[in-house]
Length: 353
Image (tube, helix red, strand yellow):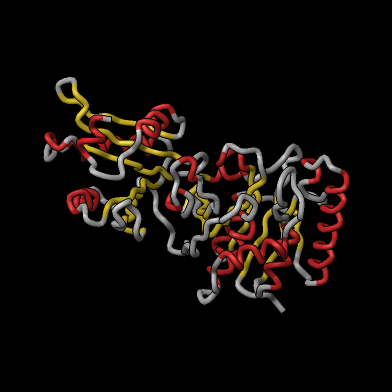
């Protein structure tokens, strides 16, 4: 706390935040010492199941600046991230902090974005990243990122990202997010409003001009086991059967396949997108179904946008967009429930005749 107070005039971490970071299993705190005194620190954040680390904060005592403390902290942070199989280290820096910007550029970081009005005094933040290993293949292009704005619209958010990647003129806003949810919701879930299942999402995508294809490993209906109320289950059953009839009427292909490297790598390489059902536990530590968008892959990783931004864990969109996930981890998370359900909606640019 002493170092925080002498280093930053504004946007300081609170004592509560620092205590949380020191004990969080998804954070690592490094300190630099000189003569028994802490003269610098760095905080790394990790996201479960992904190959991205984030440098959340770095500080050096003003009396020890210019002595290489920040560079050594950065080197150590990169090594820790690399040892945890991270492919990228990302950070935000004040647009007027030229000294820090110069350091990051010397260390091989590149600017890839900007947050407007990010800090309390309305200064912008520049977004930097450094690839710690590997390379992004030329065919991997990222669609625009769109975060879900409710607890129940991860499916519509992934549909928006898939559609926007093929249609740069698409008007992306919350109205479209909720419209897509209304067109594809199961109506009920365990509690609160219902999420979306693959047939309803495919039908909505087709009606918005895309060419979808459904991959499932079972013909069973989705999410009924988690709903105890018989009336709610019956509504969900009728709704899902109606979606399946609509998918058949629209001639949407349905294939018996699972989400894995063998099936998805060639599909993503040819330019398709894949909306994938995952277990939220491996990434978010919540046992709920969750949809993410896979938009590219190489031999080692699949690249995804996760629409969920965990603000309670100090996350911003930089922690959820453009995530490289090792294939082995992806194949583990791309199953949901006791029966290990697999569901994917392949999305291509336009409907086939």
